Length: 283
Image (tube, rainbow, N blue to C red; front, side, top):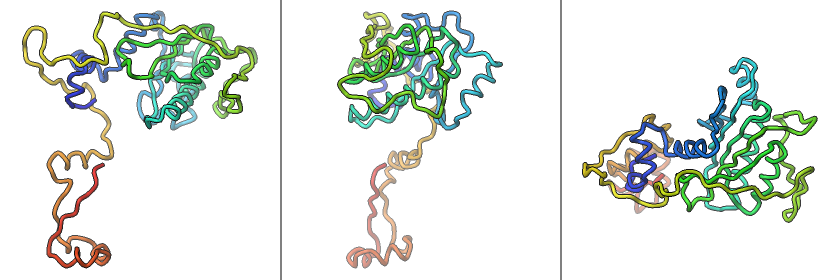
């Protein structure tokens, strides 16, 4: 979460800062729990995609079970999402594959009757994902928290009552989705294409996540920025951002400061003057 003007006007961003949450998405989970009581009776929970590298090791499921002393988890949540491209079909497909990867992990660590909650992008073929989830859970719902922007296709699949098919053996080496299906009809065995209930979570009279609110507080005091509880991971372009803020991203250099091979490759019009401006592209 940055310090842009839009972020400051985002009411859930500001509430997250004021309440010590690491991100505004904390309110999504709070509103989902308020609607479905996700944490009721939960003693062991797994949060997938909580940091980069969540899928980097295939020994992941075994290590989770060992951490729980051989006991399966009561709840598995996944708020992960790929870097969106703006191409909805591509983004929906990538999110679906991420959800299925999370489901694959869940089949290894979730106890019978457990709950699985994962981010999903609602699109044309979303019912195919619902059908896949319905094979493993007795109840599947699509939930949209109040803190999730209405302009976003983001929603959350809330799956309760983990009950895998008879004879099912979890296997991390095999995908759960068969790609050889007709786009107009689901060829999954058992339940076919289904429609799940759509539920809105959170008080409908609460803050609107798509609306910008003024920075002036109700008591008339001046708004003060609150830094994140935990700063974000340093991006690879952090140095370029710092140079840009100081106006040093485009700087003057002398030809003798460049490698000889670079100067030799320059056109004569650029190599002759004593100084020239090298404009680097923004990152």
